[in-house]
Image (cartoon, rainbow, N blue to C red):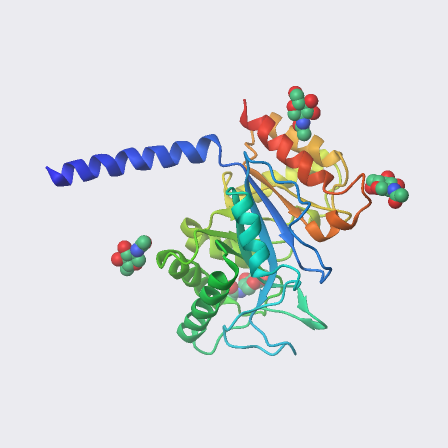
Length: 300
Ligand SMILES: *[C@@H]1O[C@H](CO)[C@@H](O)[C@H](O)[C@H]1NC(C)=O
Ligand SMILES: *[C@@H]1O[C@H](CO)[C@@H](O)[C@H](O)[C@H]1NC(C)=O
Ligand SMILES: *[C@@H]1O[C@H](CO)[C@@H](O)[C@H](O)[C@H]1NC(C)=O
Ligand SMILES: CC(=O)N[C@H]1CO[C@H](CO)[C@@H](O)[C@@H]1O
């Protein structure tokens, strides 16, 4: 009898979670802290109806001189993003989550790349311990995977990163994991996603690297990326003052995606550093309008 009641509640809870995911679950992903500018969370518009994720950029498996540390990650995001400021923005906005993005393109003048660890188990264990400590210090909820350069033999990438995410989730260190492929790194990320997609919540594909500048090209590109990574998890993305589609054409593209049957579950923006430093009329315009778009489309 107890067993049946448990099963019943498990069933109900599962249904509720699935419905929640389908109904609201609109997410905003905002990279912050990569440029070294003294950027803060203050001033970033955060709508109550959106699951707002700040992605602190970056935590890196290297010392300050760029030497590999065998899986021991250190935070290198701008020092103005303090642990207290993460706690403050989360307590002011219960819908905010904070993630650490792993790696990024470079540290100072050193280009960062994935390397095959000598011993995968030791790398995973070091990564688990160092990331757990960063998560606890900075009150984080998850990690984003942003390795941007790969050696020829990268088989261990999928295994090491997939196991790391699995282990961090299993031990309840994190609740969210995202990946950030770009035009030239889709293959290793597809390998990771195919093997460990169950523990990956969203795909922050960097559409602005795909050289698409028109709404029509954006639609075709989105079609391609959702074929690679699945329709539910891929988020359209925008680079402020950057590459790819620019200005309000981005919102036209989102409209066209919806008209073509794609459900927009969230939007990724790179980055708060750029948005915060544009002139005052344009400041955080894309963050504001993206959230408005998501709320509009969730009302359908
Ligand atoms: C973590 O993994 C262990 C071993 O596979 C399993 O028994 C346990 O249920 C998992 N816990 C969670 C929260 O997934
Ligand atoms: C402010 O930004 C807008 C939009 O990017 C631009 O059109 C305008 O020229 C900028 N104004 C100044 C004073 O930089
Ligand atoms: C949201 O909907 C309102 C009302 O229909 C509309 O005026 C506004 O332009 C929409 N905003 C976006 C970003 O789609
Ligand atoms: C062995 C292996 O997985 N190699 C892949 C590494 O990643 C590149 C792309 O960056 C692929 O082309 C290889 O197939």
